[in-house]
Image (tube, rainbow, N blue to C red; front, side, top):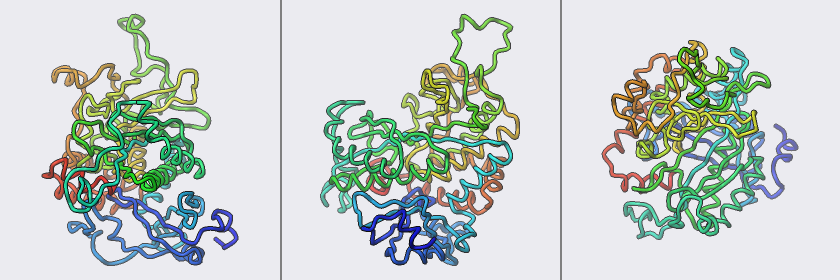
Length: 478
């Protein structure tokens, strides 16, 4: 890309460009180059060791049980002009998402998350004529910036700093307290072309949610990454710490990063379905489908996600801390089931009344420790396996599964989802079909294998820590 073309996407004030990526530990990282080097970086990339992508969140230590962790070889980070923005909170800096290349600018590295997603989306389009729209619920805590000797400070004292407030769900006073920083966040996202549908205080102390509008999948995921970075940076500007850690506080609600997805074939939304029928209108002998009105392709896609959900969680809930959030009665999706507007189901079919284009499925077992592009790619691969194997859905769950007895759960075919990262890793290793499909779709056997090595490192290092110790280590990293 030439200098005049870069000038079209950068303000004259920009002197530095941050090259941003998310690694296998779900941590946002960046390199910074002077603006005068941007054209050269776009043509030749900026070097980064392959091993640096697989760093676990607990510390900068290369994985030791997989060849991907060896200190040999490097990728090139190539800035993407279509995902480059001047930073409103620091106009001398711009931010650019990168493609990780083996040979820039046209040969991506096989484990590049954005490239893996593009490959999966291309296969969905070419093999099945499908496209996806995604939207996200971005939940996070706002903590006061700690002093050195306070909880969460640099002295190493355990725990997290005090939250911004102690109000309840949708509290008007909590919104007043956070209005200046939230307003700046929304304005910044608008300048990035990211739509905000709504925002509100969540149930936890100092916890908030910003709901991002839907967009084509690749665009939505780039926007999600930029939104996370903007939220964190603007909180810091206001002497706060924004944390996407799923469970920083005992006894408080956890934070998810719920993914809403819709499946399209041309102009047809394949997740459109009829409203649930009252039981009085379902008579014995009726051949009632699992979800009346749902297309066969939409049903098969959802069935694939549901079937592979235990293995998929290693990508969408990839931290040991993730499983402290995914508990029964917490609206986090602790059981392997789905439902129509059932907020205890990890897969919730939902829509806006009177807006048929709004039919979508909410995937609840995803949080801010995930690599967004890899998590979405894995979910899409699971759905495509459902289509390729003509899977069908069981009956939807119409109650809180956590209130059912073990016998009732068994009778309905509903199982408890993995309760630890260790169990999710085991589920992935046991799901050979999903493992092979993911490697084929992403074009790399290394990607799922080395990703699991990073998961094992995090599990082994953190599994015996208390929540307080875990939160103290991770709250500021996410």
